[in-house]
Length: 276
Length: 307
Image (cartoon, rainbow over all chains, first blue to last red; front, side, top):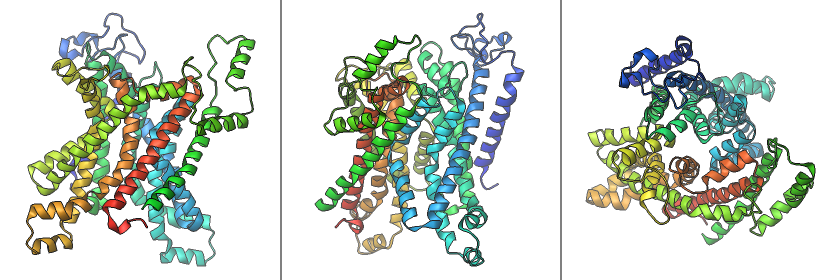
């Protein structure tokens, strides 16, 4: 137990994930069910009205905030995992090819990454998702994953460069293995360690992107809820109903902090050199 | 140095050209157009509109015309906000956005560097833990959470500052937005400064300076600070990109009349010229900041001084 923070964080993430998967089924209210008797009701622990079943209150239309937050968490986790997978796929392929092939190809490919790096990439995500993905989750994953791969590509390229001159790669080449074969069989499997660490740090970033887009109104659309769109709705009501902002905001913050702690813990455990 | 700057400036042109070309075609390939409405326009009206804005021509020709006008400094008319040109719209919002962005970057450096130095000098003490904890939290918290929460606390509860809105020339309206946007920048700068300062304090030349009998303050200011600030300088480019995207959210949260809303609105309405205008303006801005950061780096670090 050298990283108690990270272990607690894993527990928190698991708890939130399980709650968001089971919670909506246990609640009497559906995601888009309007409860006209409890419009903009405060959380039950404030007005002590446990009868209504709205533990964390309702929004302006009487929709249960806890259930909507659970759905938001589901979307966040889904986006976090899928967009990370997309970005890993592109990043590993890009970085491994650039690093292994080297020369002109390497220069061109990494130059492309540099150019994209220097742009405000959320700009690109916004344009992509506003144009292609509005309302479609698949579009959202692709838009977010498609720009998240840059750092992965850099890390993978660096690792590939050090691997490239090792004996076992040379041996593989000497036996006549093809470049694709060497990449798939020998280079990529040896990259998994550092890439896995980086991937856990990518998940919170992707969750953040999604909330950011939904906050701006180009991500998840009504009646579906995302943490970002709930925060946006809550921010407009915070004068009269601050819980509408505070509930989804604190859940998002807890989730982000937990994922960051896990990633930092993993990195420290595997690579004590980078400790901050 | 001058020759190097000139060469880099020329090198920007192809980068911008690629950005503009890619953006133009991505924006155009999107389904739907600026004149699609729930109740379709009569075909004759539609045809006239398309003709008036040149949208009836082949896409290659439209692209050529757009680039040609752009070179002359003309962003074209907005397709959705009649009577306004894209240039007018962006020029109207730019002062607010620029004040917000430069404020945030300046605050980030002016607060982040001293905080990072303090954390490094009192390493392992309460100061260090406090600052490092603050940094970790500020980096994890997105601005669309800190913004509303700050507005809630300082605007609604304490009544110290306006919750949102804008009045020409009143700095009060900029305080919360700038702080919101600056928080993660402060945190990153503090982290970078702390890390590099710790590394450099261990370097041989610092020990030599001490051994020559120089006082700690003098060593810190004359020998340590300059190399320690190099990572901060190279962070300036990414910081600008961060501040630009962050300002989209902050302008929404605090209802500031900046340029941010044009990007989202333009992309959703298929206001082709408006989206393109935003991409061009901010593309130029980020590319130029990156160049500026590189040049400052060269000034500070003689090892990479450019011939």
